[in-house]
Length: 106
Image 1 (cartoon, rainbow, N blue to C red):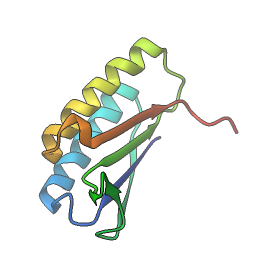
Image 2: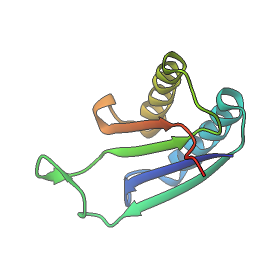
Image 3: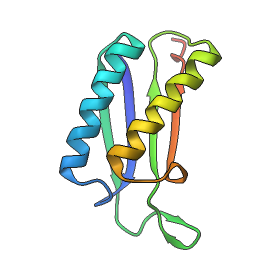
């Protein structure tokens, strides 16, 4: 199972955008990482996150893969993730922090 954790400010992602992004994450996880996605959204209260003294519009997207990834593979996957996220969320590349981490040892 690929764990997908998303942190955004409340109201930043519309319900339609959320459904579209979840579908893309589900497909990405299955086709690129070879496992189903377990998606967890966390919305922080409006006005609780700031960037440069303005309410934050950043999405934090953290995936944990089932198996270790070689760095060139991770880089290519991150480019793909950022591409579909910026399009689906209607944000710029400066408004996403993305991570695809290796599994945590037990």
